[in-house]
Image (cartoon, rainbow, N blue to C red; front, top):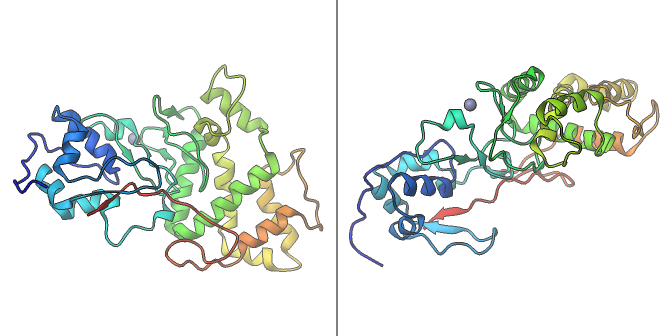
Length: 310
Ligand SMILES: [Zn+2]
């Protein structure tokens, strides 16, 4: 190990909010006309990982000396350096490219960053950023961010989704969105309703078939998912679903948001089904233990951090 002081880079561009360290090093290397490998050597980074399960280490003091940004500033922006660790399960499973117009002021190429589950679109630039619900793994929007300006219902759903989080908290909305998402999948499978087909024609004009991990496919039924989640998260609805006399009405209200008239409909008033059992499980109180839900049967996986401090 070299004892020589780390020399500061000529252009110490700052990290973007919640940027991945890998993304930051790539941008730093580019603007300073050097290589990521040289930067890794300067911050005592452990060898490049061979699998996604392996976490790499770096020296925070050396990264600070290299960039001129204090350890406090770097920790605030780079979640992987935070101590105590962030609640990873409250973030989307994969880091995603930031909205290109929003990230334009950050030099050195695209910014990849972590997002909470409820941030799915940039409402300022009308761009769909990724995935519609927890555990959904749409491909990252890499080459061309998906333009949703002609589908204002998707932007409105994003505004509503963020409002729900402000009102009910991240965990309650996470459970509600997950319940809505899984119910949608159960009811519709790979089929599309009329409204979703129309939206996909706008988002992917001319496409003859869709992949279920295409982010446009996720965007197409996002308004219905948020609509159902906004029913699910209401205390009054949750009280109804636990009451013997009011349960049927509550199921119907939730299902109607998800277009419960499709051929795969397995629910009939007054009868139990896998779907109603499922709704009941999600509607139960779910204590959290800091790493996820304490209740059995529901797991929410967040990203696997790639770096840590030495
Ligand atoms: Zn933006």
